Length: 60
Image 1 (cartoon, one colour):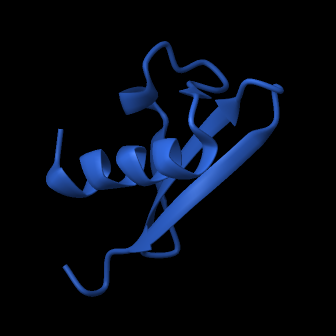
Image 2 (cartoon, helix red, strand yellow; image 1 turned 135 degrees about the horizontal axis):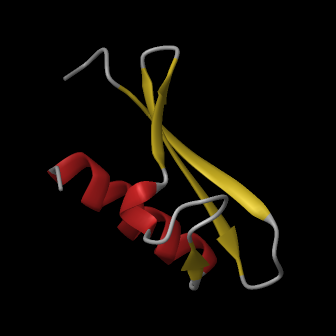
């Protein structure tokens, strides 16, 4: 897994404490996609709400 993905997962955990894969992802590492030149992490929290963390790929 890339360093950027690891940082995004850590950021999500710092904000929401407990995060889980959403959709068909079995692991949190499966929950990334690229949208409009941004890497996006989709995940659920304990209350079953879906959230995202996005980072621009333009600076990489």
